[in-house]
Image (cartoon, rainbow, N blue to C red; front, side, top):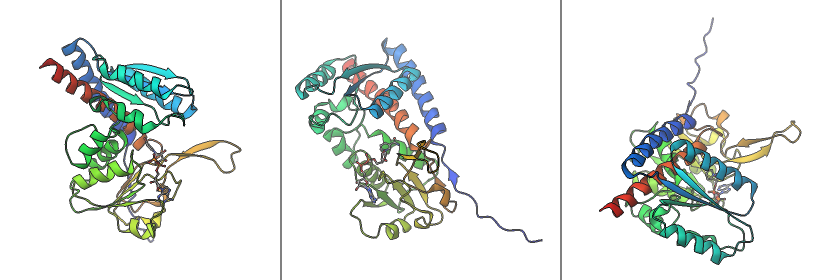
Length: 300
Ligand code: NAD
């Protein structure tokens, strides 16, 4: 009787569980903050327009804030809101000492210059880490608020990698909210980082050389099993809703990676249930961090 030797399956990094642990830790610390200061950490959530996906994201963030003992204050504005009115609201929130974090849900209506709005947020309250001051701090390796999704990706990588030094990390996607900041964080850990994008030539061969792959292209199932070197760690940031073939018009969420083909990887994140929950947990953590930093400053 022959016994086939099966290759070990890749570890599935349990993003949902790790995120729940982080949220519980934030909740305990938010409670301690409340006792120490008489008020909870507080996040203003600004939603302009009626994009249904944005509405869902905002409701989820508000619900998670509630569970963690973070006060969230919603500001719903019509799609027709004038840029000047939105900027005036940001100015009020910047000045309000009871508000520690400001989140402006993207995308904004097309007539509004999103970068002007994001640049108007006080960097100390910029819990998304998108303000140029925080971007600059990240790229110079100094302390600042780090964008939530990349921060969550690093926490997931930390659960499976002890030493990042000298590892080759390939990032697919160069957006300001995921690709570039994750590249900076990996560089800070002394990875050798290759950032790729839509115009990159020979992407498959580049990814084949990677010890760490972070896929943030929004291109469903772009990364196939034969792109992945045995023993690599794969973080799948992509979220795309696609119609399930043969199921009428039922849809499902897929990532950028064909994870079912990656049993030879060391570890992979699932989609859904991988990076997504970490993003929200990191938003809570950033809000608590911002609240502590502002309270320290005003208390002294
Ligand atoms: P984006 O559209 O701003 O940027 C996508 C990047 O990927 C671009 O730099 C583009 O050049 C590159 N790209 C696109 N197609 C490519 C291809 N075929 N080959 C190589 N590069 C390609 O998107 P984003 O905001 O950075 O988001 C990326 C993905 O991550 C999306 O699916 C988004 O929904 C998802 N996302 C998930 C979370 C989360 O919490 N899980 C958070 C943010 C974004």
